[in-house]
Length: 248
Image (tube, rainbow, N blue to C red; front, side, top):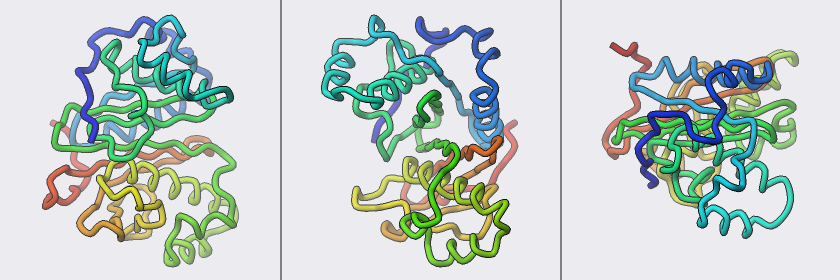
């Protein structure tokens, strides 16, 4: 598992200043606020950072430049640099090594992005692993639901009204992605292996059918059509996810 470096006490060079964060595009600001609201419900401190501009080439380390060259051409380069910019807001020059961002089994920090926004989260709780994900419209198609939903979850979706079904689908996808990132599981595990204990989107526990004992606690919300989700699990094998608790 990855363990994060010390979080930066000051804003990184390429990160927007607080005033710029306040002036984010409306949807980006809403997504950032949505994830921050979920993080505030967790019983441990979570830092949230975002980026809408890729980290500048001048700010990349030699290792990061080498990794970027290996990515070749295409939109993946911009998305990766967006992720590095979000991590820079959290960790400054101590950001995690290239290749670790966006992978499963991320202990203490996690990253997700759309084409124009990257969100990074981190916690200093060393016995926890955390995952984050966002799913923008249109989201997974109806035909693809069978690839990541259990039969019971598909039946539950079928009972919803047409006006709410797609939003629920997006939230299910986001929470399973966040769960996948937060749980230490074999590489053969897929999203469909994560099963919700109850038909509740707002919060609950997801178990990994392919890895007995691998469970995580999740929270989700819908932000103007974009699904946002956080998930966490205890790193000890015998520790079960706990309910939402207010922080002291």
